[in-house]
Image (cartoon, rainbow, N blue to C red):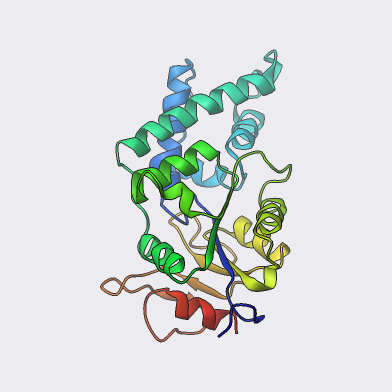
Amino acid sequence: MKKDEKSAVGAVLFDVDGTLADTERDGHRPAFNAAFRELGLDWEWGVELYGELLAITGGKERIRHFIDKHAPAELARSGLDDWIARLHKVKTRHYVEALERGGIPLRPGVARLIRQLREANIKIAIATTTTPENVTGLLKSTLGEDSPGWFDVIGAGDIVPGKKPEPDIYHWVLDRLGLPPEQCLAIEDSENGLRAALAAGLDTVVTVSDYTRFQDFTGARVVLSDLGEPAQPFTVLRGDQPNRGWADVELLMKLKT
């Protein structure tokens, strides 16, 4: 199949949190709690509460939502937006330190698929609203120091005004890739991420995480437990049953036909 055909995959766009790694429950959540303690706050985001907060995309936005719902007295704080940004910066430091300790591995099939895409000269990109530091920290700690340079485009952080489910980050990445959405595929783990990708015109593969397993993935090309490995096949949760139990270039090409 020629790469300029409509059904070909010219690029694969990866979400990060929950997609590349199960970062939310055991990475971001403890980092938020560590930041709260460092700044003298008595807040504690448990597993269940954090699952609810994930409906809000973006760390600073999540903090603001929590304040609105659970700590309204903080709304009177002078320079609230700047304070939230400082709190989030402290949280990011704790998260990156956890990554550097090697505490957050990639999900099944992620490293293998990324390497196969590179070997096939298919562009790879990141489309996330987590901070650039979080992205590079995860990549370096799992794929190697040079791995951020493997990606043709890394779209992360506050470079666009609208967070997922708005499609802004996908439009930004597609523009810099120089490819139409018809030639690209997104890999997401959440309903918000899927909605963002679909709104940008992208066919999307969903690999559910612990927090997103029961969300609405209507419109996804296929919903999988993970990307799978030959020795650890994925489970198909919705969509056509592939011929094999792991995502590779051949499977992605078939999903575009």
